[in-house]
Length: 185
Image 1: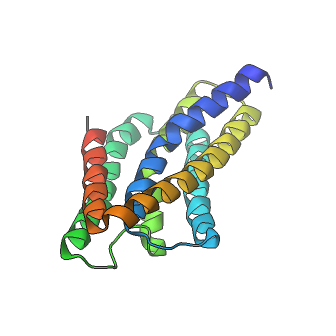
Image 2: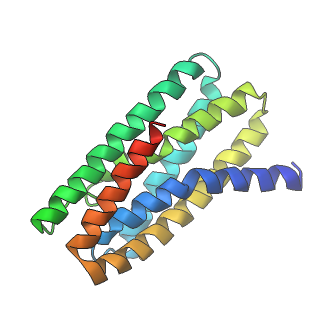
């Protein structure tokens, strides 16, 4: 491993986790008080799914890469549309219990919606002939950077939610829907 390999792995990890940060920041606007343990669970789920899908993609190789690229955008759109639409609906109702990061199902949906690109990157790394040690380094960087970005997203989103209440939840949901729509292009 060279310094260049590590720098590349970190750069890829940062680019992959940008949407994790955005989803967690938007969703956390209505999360309320969440302790360090709760944030750690959310961060761990996102990080495991993100790194796991990268590893699965690397292992999967080129068997169905063109089909996956087409399908990944649609699946990501559907998942983000569901999560974002639910947040907007709950924010409009003023309900304290929205469909955001409250509940394991919503955490899993958010993690998969933001990690489909990691699967595609894993496939492309496999097609590029990257050896296993480089794939392990990349997956490790993805795990660490994703966990850190999820913590940062939750903390910043929660602060916005405390100040703006249901309006922040509606805005956060709208942003997720927009991210989903942009995935289609």
